[in-house]
Length: 253
Image 1 (cartoon, rainbow, N blue to C red):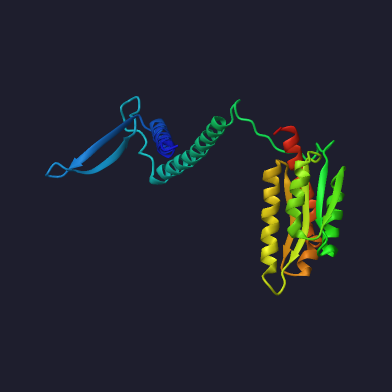
Image 2 (cartoon, rainbow, N blue to C red; image 1 turned 90 degrees about the horizontal axis):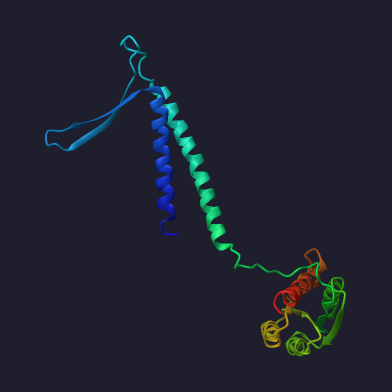
Protein backbone atom coordinates (compact mmCIF):
# COMPACT_ATOMS: atom_id res chain seq x y z
CA UNK A 1 0.00 0.00 0.00
CA UNK A 2 2.91 2.39 0.68
CA UNK A 3 4.06 2.38 -2.95
CA UNK A 4 0.59 2.48 -4.45
CA UNK A 5 0.20 6.27 -4.94
CA UNK A 6 3.68 6.82 -6.48
CA UNK A 7 3.07 3.90 -8.84
CA UNK A 8 -0.23 5.38 -9.98
CA UNK A 9 1.40 8.80 -10.47
CA UNK A 10 4.19 7.31 -12.57
CA UNK A 11 1.70 5.42 -14.71
CA UNK A 12 -0.33 8.57 -15.37
CA UNK A 13 2.81 10.62 -16.15
CA UNK A 14 4.05 7.93 -18.54
CA UNK A 15 0.64 7.82 -20.22
CA UNK A 16 0.64 11.62 -20.68
CA UNK A 17 4.15 11.65 -22.17
CA UNK A 18 3.36 8.84 -24.59
CA UNK A 19 0.14 10.46 -25.81
CA UNK A 20 1.80 13.83 -26.40
CA UNK A 21 4.61 12.16 -28.33
CA UNK A 22 2.16 10.27 -30.52
CA UNK A 23 0.09 13.39 -31.21
CA UNK A 24 3.01 15.62 -32.15
CA UNK A 25 4.76 12.87 -34.13
CA UNK A 26 1.66 12.53 -36.30
CA UNK A 27 2.00 16.21 -37.27
CA UNK A 28 5.75 16.52 -37.51
CA UNK A 29 8.49 14.16 -38.56
CA UNK A 30 11.34 15.55 -36.53
CA UNK A 31 11.66 16.65 -32.94
CA UNK A 32 14.63 18.68 -31.83
CA UNK A 33 15.54 19.56 -28.31
CA UNK A 34 18.24 22.12 -27.69
CA UNK A 35 19.53 23.66 -24.56
CA UNK A 36 20.67 27.23 -24.22
CA UNK A 37 23.50 27.48 -21.80
CA UNK A 38 24.64 30.59 -20.04
CA UNK A 39 28.27 31.63 -19.90
CA UNK A 40 28.90 29.55 -16.79
CA UNK A 41 27.67 26.45 -18.51
CA UNK A 42 24.61 26.05 -16.29
CA UNK A 43 21.32 24.93 -17.73
CA UNK A 44 19.08 27.95 -18.28
CA UNK A 45 16.23 26.90 -20.54
CA UNK A 46 15.02 23.84 -22.36
CA UNK A 47 12.75 24.44 -25.29
CA UNK A 48 11.01 22.28 -27.79
CA UNK A 49 10.97 22.89 -31.52
CA UNK A 50 8.78 20.96 -33.93
CA UNK A 51 10.08 21.12 -37.50
CA UNK A 52 7.57 20.34 -40.25
CA UNK A 53 8.58 17.74 -42.84
CA UNK A 54 9.68 18.92 -46.30
CA UNK A 55 7.63 18.15 -49.38
CA UNK A 56 8.84 15.71 -52.03
CA UNK A 57 10.54 18.53 -53.93
CA UNK A 58 12.34 19.72 -50.78
CA UNK A 59 10.26 22.89 -50.65
CA UNK A 60 9.05 24.11 -47.26
CA UNK A 61 5.77 22.60 -46.23
CA UNK A 62 2.97 24.18 -44.22
CA UNK A 63 3.95 26.28 -41.21
CA UNK A 64 4.16 24.72 -37.75
CA UNK A 65 0.92 24.19 -35.86
CA UNK A 66 -0.55 27.29 -34.36
CA UNK A 67 -0.65 27.98 -30.65
CA UNK A 68 -4.40 27.28 -30.61
CA UNK A 69 -3.86 23.91 -32.23
CA UNK A 70 -1.11 23.02 -29.77
CA UNK A 71 -3.32 24.14 -26.90
CA UNK A 72 -6.12 21.88 -28.13
CA UNK A 73 -3.67 19.00 -28.22
CA UNK A 74 -2.62 19.77 -24.66
CA UNK A 75 -6.22 19.85 -23.42
CA UNK A 76 -6.93 16.60 -25.21
CA UNK A 77 -3.87 15.03 -23.59
CA UNK A 78 -4.96 16.20 -20.16
CA UNK A 79 -8.45 14.79 -20.71
CA UNK A 80 -7.05 11.46 -21.87
CA UNK A 81 -4.73 11.35 -18.88
CA UNK A 82 -7.59 12.02 -16.45
CA UNK A 83 -9.59 9.22 -18.02
CA UNK A 84 -6.54 7.00 -17.89
CA UNK A 85 -6.04 7.88 -14.23
CA UNK A 86 -9.65 6.94 -13.45
CA UNK A 87 -9.28 3.61 -15.23
CA UNK A 88 -6.01 2.99 -13.39
CA UNK A 89 -7.70 3.62 -10.04
CA UNK A 90 -10.51 1.25 -11.02
CA UNK A 91 -7.98 -1.47 -11.78
CA UNK A 92 -6.15 -0.85 -8.50
CA UNK A 93 -9.42 -0.97 -6.54
CA UNK A 94 -10.40 -4.21 -8.22
CA UNK A 95 -7.04 -5.77 -7.43
CA UNK A 96 -7.23 -4.67 -3.80
CA UNK A 97 -10.70 -6.15 -3.42
CA UNK A 98 -9.67 -9.39 -5.05
CA UNK A 99 -6.68 -9.60 -2.69
CA UNK A 100 -9.01 -9.53 0.33
CA UNK A 101 -11.74 -11.80 -1.07
CA UNK A 102 -10.28 -15.27 -1.49
CA UNK A 103 -11.51 -18.81 -1.17
CA UNK A 104 -10.31 -18.82 2.43
CA UNK A 105 -12.50 -15.84 3.42
CA UNK A 106 -16.14 -16.51 4.28
CA UNK A 107 -18.73 -13.82 4.98
CA UNK A 108 -21.71 -14.90 7.08
CA UNK A 109 -24.77 -13.00 8.23
CA UNK A 110 -28.09 -13.77 9.84
CA UNK A 111 -31.23 -13.97 7.74
CA UNK A 112 -34.62 -12.47 8.46
CA UNK A 113 -36.20 -15.07 6.15
CA UNK A 114 -34.91 -18.19 7.90
CA UNK A 115 -36.84 -18.05 11.15
CA UNK A 116 -38.45 -21.49 10.91
CA UNK A 117 -38.12 -23.45 14.13
CA UNK A 118 -36.54 -20.60 16.08
CA UNK A 119 -37.92 -19.93 19.54
CA UNK A 120 -37.75 -16.58 21.29
CA UNK A 121 -38.19 -15.44 24.87
CA UNK A 122 -39.41 -11.91 25.58
CA UNK A 123 -38.67 -10.38 28.97
CA UNK A 124 -40.93 -7.38 29.59
CA UNK A 125 -40.84 -4.86 32.42
CA UNK A 126 -44.20 -3.93 33.96
CA UNK A 127 -42.98 -0.50 35.01
CA UNK A 128 -44.27 2.08 32.50
CA UNK A 129 -46.59 -0.64 31.25
CA UNK A 130 -48.48 1.75 28.99
CA UNK A 131 -45.30 1.89 26.91
CA UNK A 132 -43.93 -1.63 27.30
CA UNK A 133 -47.22 -3.23 26.21
CA UNK A 134 -47.05 -1.36 22.94
CA UNK A 135 -43.45 -2.47 22.46
CA UNK A 136 -44.47 -6.06 23.19
CA UNK A 137 -47.25 -5.91 20.60
CA UNK A 138 -44.76 -4.76 17.99
CA UNK A 139 -42.38 -7.59 18.83
CA UNK A 140 -45.05 -10.31 18.85
CA UNK A 141 -46.03 -9.44 15.29
CA UNK A 142 -42.51 -10.46 14.21
CA UNK A 143 -42.10 -13.77 16.05
CA UNK A 144 -43.85 -17.06 15.27
CA UNK A 145 -42.83 -18.98 18.40
CA UNK A 146 -42.30 -17.04 21.59
CA UNK A 147 -42.73 -17.00 25.34
CA UNK A 148 -43.37 -13.85 27.35
CA UNK A 149 -41.97 -13.35 30.85
CA UNK A 150 -42.97 -10.29 32.87
CA UNK A 151 -40.65 -8.75 35.47
CA UNK A 152 -41.24 -5.79 37.83
CA UNK A 153 -38.96 -3.32 36.10
CA UNK A 154 -36.05 -2.84 33.71
CA UNK A 155 -33.52 -3.38 36.49
CA UNK A 156 -34.64 -7.05 36.84
CA UNK A 157 -34.47 -7.85 33.13
CA UNK A 158 -30.82 -8.93 33.01
CA UNK A 159 -30.91 -11.78 35.54
CA UNK A 160 -34.07 -13.28 34.01
CA UNK A 161 -32.69 -13.00 30.49
CA UNK A 162 -29.55 -14.87 31.54
CA UNK A 163 -31.58 -17.69 33.11
CA UNK A 164 -33.70 -18.04 29.97
CA UNK A 165 -30.62 -18.05 27.77
CA UNK A 166 -28.94 -20.78 29.80
CA UNK A 167 -32.07 -22.94 29.71
CA UNK A 168 -31.32 -23.96 26.14
CA UNK A 169 -34.93 -23.57 25.11
CA UNK A 170 -34.58 -20.34 23.18
CA UNK A 171 -32.53 -19.08 20.26
CA UNK A 172 -32.63 -15.45 21.41
CA UNK A 173 -33.99 -13.35 24.26
CA UNK A 174 -35.55 -9.96 23.61
CA UNK A 175 -35.50 -7.57 26.56
CA UNK A 176 -38.20 -4.87 26.60
CA UNK A 177 -38.54 -2.02 29.05
CA UNK A 178 -38.95 1.73 29.33
CA UNK A 179 -36.95 4.03 31.60
CA UNK A 180 -38.09 7.65 31.69
CA UNK A 181 -36.08 10.41 33.34
CA UNK A 182 -37.51 11.86 36.53
CA UNK A 183 -36.44 14.43 39.10
CA UNK A 184 -33.64 12.33 40.60
CA UNK A 185 -30.62 10.38 39.38
CA UNK A 186 -32.53 7.11 39.70
CA UNK A 187 -32.95 7.18 35.92
CA UNK A 188 -29.20 6.93 35.31
CA UNK A 189 -28.75 4.03 37.72
CA UNK A 190 -31.60 1.99 36.22
CA UNK A 191 -30.70 2.70 32.59
CA UNK A 192 -27.04 1.81 33.06
CA UNK A 193 -27.84 -1.30 35.08
CA UNK A 194 -30.36 -2.51 32.51
CA UNK A 195 -27.90 -2.10 29.65
CA UNK A 196 -25.02 -3.84 31.44
CA UNK A 197 -27.35 -6.57 32.68
CA UNK A 198 -28.58 -7.45 29.20
CA UNK A 199 -25.03 -7.42 27.86
CA UNK A 200 -23.81 -9.72 30.64
CA UNK A 201 -26.74 -12.07 30.10
CA UNK A 202 -25.83 -12.56 26.46
CA UNK A 203 -22.14 -13.08 27.18
CA UNK A 204 -22.67 -15.49 30.07
CA UNK A 205 -25.42 -17.56 28.46
CA UNK A 206 -24.02 -17.68 24.92
CA UNK A 207 -27.45 -16.76 23.56
CA UNK A 208 -28.16 -13.40 21.90
CA UNK A 209 -29.88 -11.09 24.38
CA UNK A 210 -31.21 -8.03 22.58
CA UNK A 211 -31.47 -4.66 24.31
CA UNK A 212 -34.93 -3.24 23.68
CA UNK A 213 -35.19 -0.92 26.66
CA UNK A 214 -36.22 2.65 25.83
CA UNK A 215 -34.34 5.37 27.71
CA UNK A 216 -36.29 8.58 27.17
CA UNK A 217 -36.41 12.09 28.59
CA UNK A 218 -40.21 12.17 28.92
CA UNK A 219 -43.35 10.17 28.21
CA UNK A 220 -43.89 11.80 24.82
CA UNK A 221 -40.57 10.45 23.57
CA UNK A 222 -41.44 6.98 24.84
CA UNK A 223 -44.88 6.94 23.18
CA UNK A 224 -43.43 8.20 19.89
CA UNK A 225 -41.04 5.23 19.91
CA UNK A 226 -43.64 2.62 20.84
CA UNK A 227 -45.89 2.94 17.82
CA UNK A 228 -45.96 6.71 17.29
CA UNK A 229 -44.29 8.86 14.66
CA UNK A 230 -40.86 7.38 15.41
CA UNK A 231 -42.04 3.81 14.78
CA UNK A 232 -42.18 0.87 17.15
CA UNK A 233 -38.83 -0.04 18.65
CA UNK A 234 -40.29 -3.31 19.86
CA UNK A 235 -40.72 -4.47 16.27
CA UNK A 236 -37.26 -3.19 15.31
CA UNK A 237 -35.49 -5.00 18.13
CA UNK A 238 -37.50 -8.13 17.32
CA UNK A 239 -35.97 -8.10 13.84
CA UNK A 240 -32.55 -7.79 15.46
CA UNK A 241 -33.31 -10.83 17.61
CA UNK A 242 -34.47 -12.78 14.57
CA UNK A 243 -31.31 -11.99 12.62
CA UNK A 244 -29.00 -12.84 15.52
CA UNK A 245 -30.84 -16.09 16.23
CA UNK A 246 -30.53 -17.07 12.58
CA UNK A 247 -26.83 -16.23 12.61
CA UNK A 248 -26.16 -18.36 15.66
CA UNK A 249 -28.34 -21.24 14.50
CA UNK A 250 -27.10 -21.55 10.93
CA UNK A 251 -23.52 -20.28 11.02
CA UNK A 252 -22.06 -20.12 14.54
CA UNK A 253 -22.95 -23.46 16.07
